[in-house]
Length: 317
Image (cartoon, rainbow, N blue to C red; front, side, top):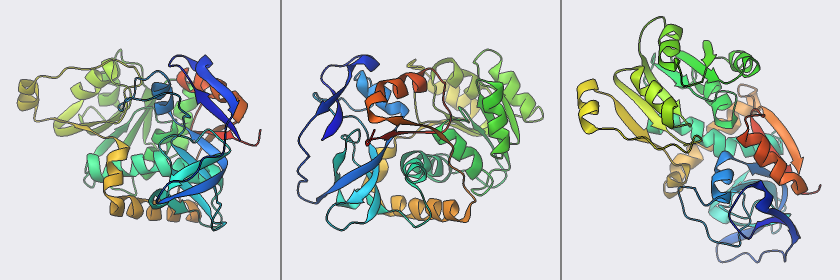
């Protein structure tokens, strides 16, 4: 089978298209013929061994696939952890989800990782209360574009989006944001306050870290929360406990794969997300479908902020 493999850590150039044997599914696994593989920002961190979890080589990247179960012929979307950038992937049976009729592969992929993340940012990590103001950083991205749309349905009173270009801010407004501002760190605190009519905000979803985190924290109201679900800037932050005490603010971390230990929460969210997509209440923005052979270009485009929404690899090309 054709697959993209990493044999050494590094830049996009380490993504090699190779021929490998079709994987043999282990106990409690199924073989999936991949029709689409998702690309996530976390993949760029894995490629350099800078992810939350340490990686081992050689490795086929790709945490999620859409395709067909070889044993049942059922269309599924599956969390595989690794191995997604290939024509076939072995997936834990418990992490395969049937794809409803009327939901295409790209939509299913987006709902699996980005959708689950956005849904649980509201419900599990931030525990957003009805009427609270929520800031969604990188609002034109995979998680952000869904988080903007889920804001009102999941209780937010006001959704403020940030993005790095006028076109991306316009997209965020089209998706339902009440306001959209430049996400650059300099002056960000002031722009967030202005977008909230001069008042501090209640919740911030941060995927950048570094100076964006500091500016976001400064914009919080007492009992406000910053939820950290990524560190795209690769800049770590330090926060003193006394500052938390004086401001009555909270910082919450969120890593999707901890949810896998709580399958009921995954199932609940997936049902809700698929239902919203089928009704047309949730729009997946597909930012690009790349041939498998151009996985490196997808990584470059993603890292350089050239894309919006969900990126997909087509293993047939």
